[in-house]
Image 1 (tube, rainbow, N blue to C red):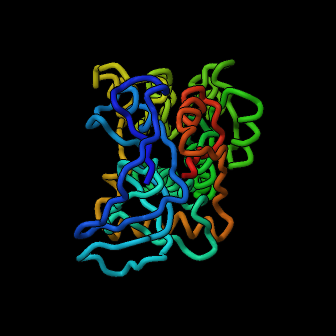
Image 2: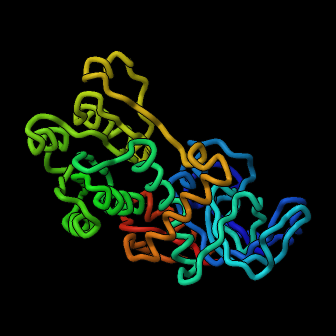
Length: 322
């Protein structure tokens, strides 16, 4: 098998392809031939050393493919099954052993590239807007990076929930994508203060929730955009980590809430994982959720995939095709 390895933290140049023995799955494990692996900002953080990982290490946390072998104590899955997964290190590879309890079956009618593009980002958008802050008819929300992978999915789901969606973007091309995804108003954050604009468009009230994957560059203005008892959902930090701050600011801003959720805490049980994946796949099958794939790159070109993310060029999912 082949896999991307990281010998030490660094820039994109540290990514290399290594050949190694294809593993045999142990108890509870499933060997999957990877047909598509998803690329995410956490991979960049791990590669750079911003997030610690065992070294030398292997990158990639999600993907989809076909089962080739199963270990003991595995039931309900057979070779030939099409599956998808998240939170499995080493997914930038031709093969990966996945714990059976992390696998979900890809339904008929959905190809594995779509499944790989949807599984992590789709479930992330799903838990953010149905559980972390459950949007309802009449709510107003801000979705940062509205033309990105999660951003477009959040806009679609928020629109379906009946919320009024403000999407922040940097270019006219991205504005069009955000509108097509369901954003009611698009704010060019480089040209105007999105906080002031959101307040102006809500008659000074502010929004009920901000979904923020940007972090340091948007944090203060995201807080300032919230209505009383509103919630800032900080689920990423593409611009860098948020500095320490005084919690008293939450009180002064109107008893607002701040949370930093992760997908793992919203898929802790088999039932919750299956339910969230089923919701995402069902929306795709019904045509309610459009999955946009920005680019597909070969395993040897993983550095190019990281360049796209770090350059904020992406308007959808980037996949590695082993």
